[in-house]
Image 1 (tube, rainbow, N blue to C red):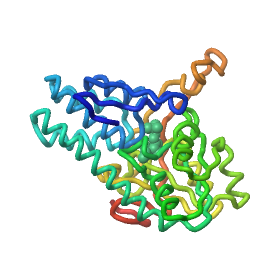
Image 2 (cartoon, protein in one colour):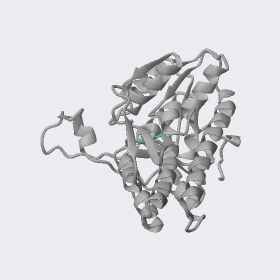
Image 3 (cartoon, rainbow, N blue to C red):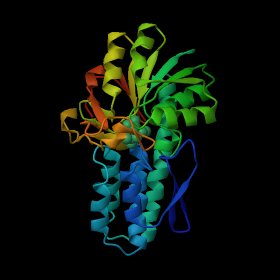
Length: 316
Ligand code: MRU
């Protein structure tokens, strides 16, 4: 994301890695659409985009309360969105300059938190580790560096010899399209795998740890993240492999006692039935497509934050 000449420029994640297209967002409505359609995605990036959306609303003289409501209704699970909007709301009827400064602060703070997460988390990664990850939690999903992928990046920067297994992440393939794109750019050794390959790799002793990001963490450590994360945590526990979550403090929701209270977004059936616009399912096929699942805190060996490494039982 880049703020330039009163526009929010955004790398369109829907068409990566085939094309690098920068969208020009000029109104908060453009930002709402970009979040809904997943041109921008990843919990911290959604929060940052929403903050810039509020700056655009002020710039265009829109009703700030209405703008905030529209942005809040774009996606329900990642708490970073609501966290960023609440930060903006606390400024009251602020002018454009104030809101832009706050959006830029939110973005800069996110990058700083990710670098700190990376520093702490890299200590958990042994030499010659095979690390399994899901979805995209890298620079694209944040202000930069990334959370789970930030830990991987920091371990690589610390000259640890590592190899990454990146789950494809059906149905939107954030792992195959976006994580692979980032790892290639960074020169970090990896193989992409179909989601269903994870169990057999663990059984073969080819996974030393699993690390994932988060969209919302309840006070007992229950964590919502991309659908498939829970299965990986169960598999990891069965095979005695450490399972880690990496997330900044903007992802914690201490108002929720457990993960059962986290709203889980359901997305369109077309995400499952179509690939690149082509139907692969019979007409009339019924689909259930939750975008996230909840991993109980009891299956998470450590939660890596900018404030350090936490281990269960969790009380956030
Ligand atoms: O649906 P997405 O692509 O927005 O889901 C993203 C994830 O689940 C990420 O793991 C999470 O937001 C953390 S990103 C640092």
